[in-house]
Image 1 (cartoon, one colour):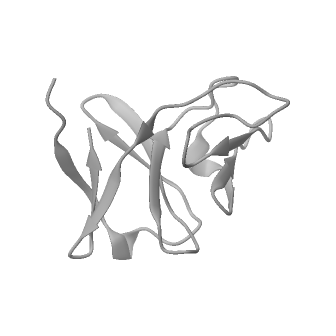
Image 2: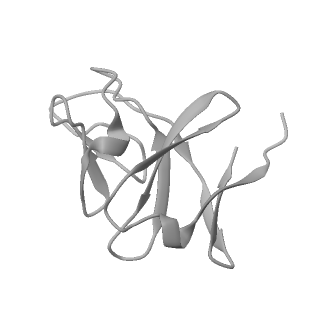
Image 3: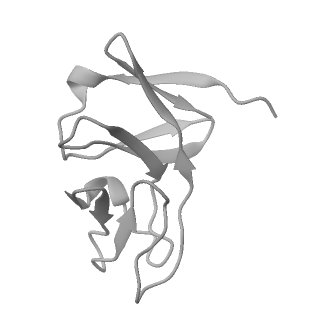
Length: 103
């Protein structure tokens, strides 16, 4: 399968520290605009509770699951110890104010 860049949102429509859930080819993805300006994208569901990660609290480069407070890395997708699990991580790029995800 060939990876493709897909435009998902204008950066101006993605407030910092507020997640947004988007769907690409039937896959739900949570995207985040971090306080340092980076944009990150991960699988939208917590691997433990299926909680909506886009609704979680963002702190630094982590998002906290809104259901069980698990901390998930927005860089690696790994749930932080002592909890376990991992979500998919997607490459993001901002081009001319538009956010693209490589899918």
